[in-house]
Length: 328
Image (cartoon, rainbow, N blue to C red; front, top):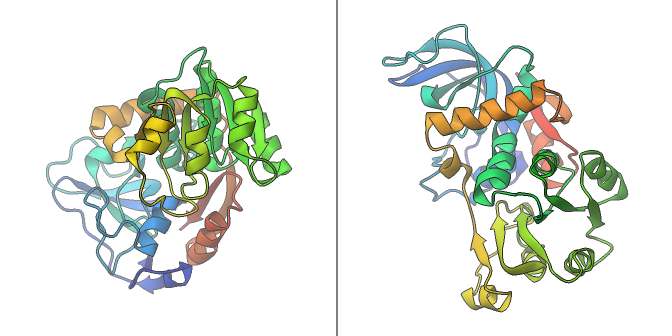
């Protein structure tokens, strides 16, 4: 089969198309014929080596990247009865998706209901699940809350805006251009701040009358984390759920005290879809909202598997305005 391989950690030029043997499902696994592989920043972290030592998302060179996909069950290993050959499924947090076939722990698979296209189902996995747990579980938003979502025009950002509005929150976003600001407003954002033009922390404080945000969802990291701390309410929550601009480095606990005794977390999606029941509950909720016409999912572009490098360049260059997919 065709697959993208990484032989050494580094830049996007380490992504190389290769001919490799198709995998076979082991006990508890299913073999998936991949239709779409999602492209996410977690793939960049793995490719560059940022996640090389993590136990939660293990990867050992050489490997096939890709932590999200959708397609058809080709075969199942021993002990698998939740899915069968021919089922249409999606999944996330199983490495190996940049390929024509991938083996996935069967418990991570979710069935795709009729009416949800494969490309949409893929986008609702890693980015959709992340937006869901951030707004529903990590800090359960409700009427009267104000949240700040960085990168509001990205794939996860657009979904998080919509889910936050459904829960009654006031939504402030940061974006890099007026075009992206308009995208965020179309998804329901109450305020869009062009972070390159103004001090976003000051803008958030002005919008909230000096009160600050109840929660900041910061997927950018190094470039924004200091400002994110400044614009929180006392005892607010800062979630560093991504490192698009690079890891934040050391954070002095006294900075949290000085910011108003705020809470700080660096969550993993894996902790919020840790069981089949939780995984399916989130997926079912997202599928339902899409089928009801209440959740818009934006596909920025579809590229052939051979263009994995271009896909990584696009998300690292902050060029995406929605989900980027690789089509096998």
